[in-house]
Length: 214
Image 1 (cartoon, one colour):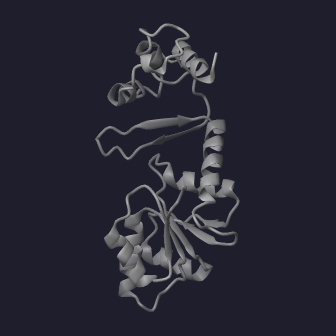
Image 2 (tube, rainbow, N blue to C red):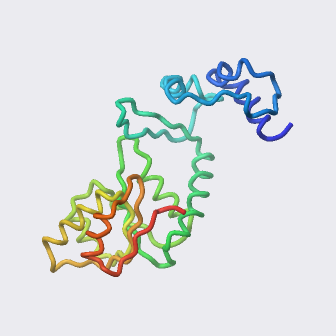
């Protein structure tokens, strides 16, 4: 039995959702085209009761996150400690390909709290990458405080969502006497548009802008 079949048989035995989803597929079927595609709406509905309809075992330790819930229905994700470590370790490998160098001072400006993953995720993946020094400032910190930290601590890399970058750029345009030496912007969580790139270049003409992961 190959790994695909092993995986399918495991979730069919242990997850009520997948047991129902695959009930018309013969056990051990190797033909992937026979397996129904997961319906997003029914999947997340089954996941609502602390994951009981989807998870393949009792969930007794780990970490829980939720999406932003822009559709009005926040989506919860459940990780065991081992799964989270594996996830951030693999992500850390991708982080080393975004232009960060050893010795860089990286401000983590992603958002923390309310079960959002990004701040903890970025903190942990940078730790796993073992590249650079992390400063966990967070996106909720007032802009003037963040900028003061950048200057005082010699931060040269910003990691965050583009809207946070734009708040910092707008603040610096009003305060030309303040110019932290930012060399690299690492964005994630949102698309970055041409007008935002131009705004960054107007204040930091030599700075590079990359995705936080590759």
